[in-house]
Image (cartoon, rainbow, N blue to C red; front, top):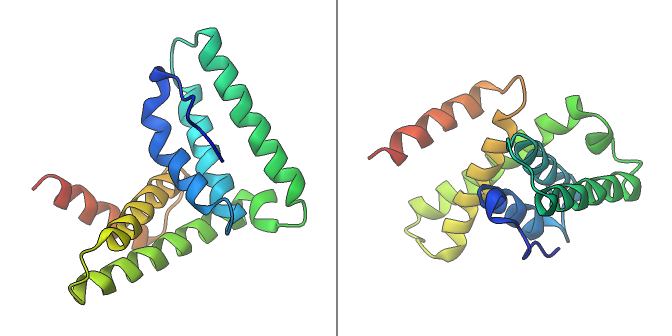
Length: 147
């Protein structure tokens, strides 16, 4: 998945697009929800010049393609099932990153796990309800980022 043509008005979506790209070969559910979150955030941009509209349209086309190619996937068809899946996956990534951190493994793989977990927590926090674990991790993340 290549998102090298992201308009400057939408650069804040890069983290979600990168996470979608990182998971595109292995986890279409995570890819779908990262792209969906990016699309929804992109829609909130107040001024949408033609190149921004074109990019958002291509993002919407990619979402439709993912939905079509995974038509038997309940997590993609039903957000009520999909959001908890993303939440659990984020918690799994966070746990793996934390374990590496506790074992003094501070390499790029650990950083990438933490970043992916944080990105997915942002995706989940865009949903109406989040679990207590996610709320707690978001609180920790806000606190540690302000240090």
